[in-house]
Length: 313
Image 1 (tube, rainbow, N blue to C red):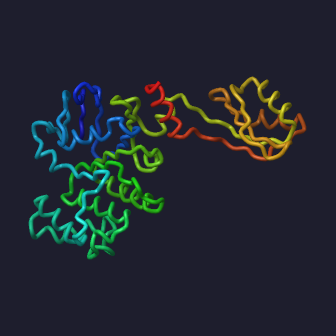
Image 2 (image 1 turned 90 degrees about the horizontal axis):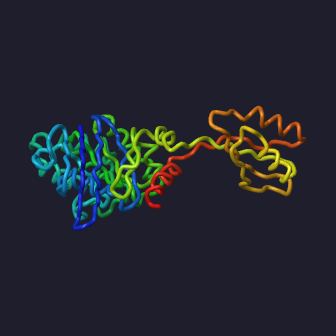
Image 3 (image 1 turned 120 degrees about the vertical axis):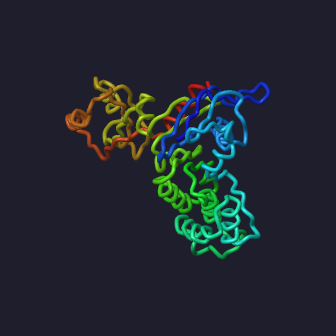
């Protein structure tokens, strides 16, 4: 559905996008992830024909964006970070206005507004002035305008910025619902959004793509592995020494203290090794007690820091 090849954008002597390549399949929700200033919004501006690329090619449904700007824009629904709403309009008036400028036929507009209000959860506020809406409902209205013309592609730029946790959960659910029928590019720098919403992730930093794949794939590519957390009752120095002597452990560190005899330890096992039985026997044979034991999976946030740090430094 979307093909980006050798895309470069320069402003004066600054390279904003540096020869990036990626594609998005029909029906896929792609997380476009990166720190502020990474090049996410620039890519979106080129996709939506707001900016032209310095070089490279962008195609939407086989159409070159630079050559067929009007046709490609008709295939896109766009929700910018700051939703451009008319506060003096009722929600119904605004959606009708959007439907008209998007070229819907008069006999289609009423039905489509009803469908969009249902999809976006706007029925309870449809006759309210926009300036009386909460930030969460304003985002819903923004999504409503983005899907009004039933586009094939939906581009969302930081759609949950400034929302409270309940509103974020609502917008996430809404995006997943819409994503069953649309190709979505979901730009964000909030890592929890990606795992909760996206099928695939691209991480961009300083205009370059540093990694891509599913959240699980990125963790594997980064060479990350599980960490074991164990809380042991016993002499701290003895426990630490014995743990470091275990041949299948790469690293051990103390993370917290409950009392003079109870400490929490993070243990990094060698790749592919199951330490549970061996660790339990070591604790038992030394007369210590295990008070807590669990595995700590590496988060996408840690992977993100690792991948972007390698370019920053």
